[in-house]
Image (cartoon, rainbow, N blue to C red):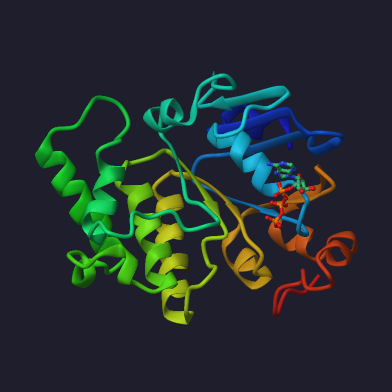
Length: 254
Ligand code: ATP
């Protein structure tokens, strides 16, 4: 991470450490997610990606280091306070209310819009916009629990976006999506970055990382092994070794 990136980043980790017993799940990580950019976090199972995500989102408190959101130190703020400041996330394990209709699940995100408490009309409009963005209008009235995994991933994304965040954290957003849903995801995420949002995603699919990410951080053993432009990092032999030789996306040349 260079100084310029850190200076203008919407979300920054500085020397973040999180221990579980004797294990340093995150062992001093610096990371920056700038506005208008898609940043990806990759690495093998157990590398510390989810723990770092939890530290950034506020569901886990770091043992050392700082988290900055738009230049403000939020290290000690709980997750819901960070949501109000414009940070949204989706989860690796899908977390919807199964008995509630799809639209009501998305509405929960709209009710947590950043800034002032929104009025009903603003919530209705934000919910409708987020449903439309992912083509969810036709299942809006159905219970979320009846929907397949791919649709639920999109419901989670719609819920996160309905809150009009400035920073979006996505934990394995393509897991369970079919080809058409993945194409929609790519186009929506690119559009969000194009409008200035800072996106940070954990993703296991190298093709998707190569297609989407501007910058990639590769983690192993709780540390950032390397970071830089996606093509450079994905072509790095160390990354290929860590990622079981599957890092180079199809068609990525030196
Ligand atoms: P995956 O790709 O499998 O999700 P990851 O890169 O997200 O892996 P983490 O889930 O952050 O990695 O785990 C990093 C290390 O911290 C692992 O050794 C894991 O066992 C440990 N760990 C994570 N959460 C906890 C916890 N709540 N209690 C104890 N150990 C934990």
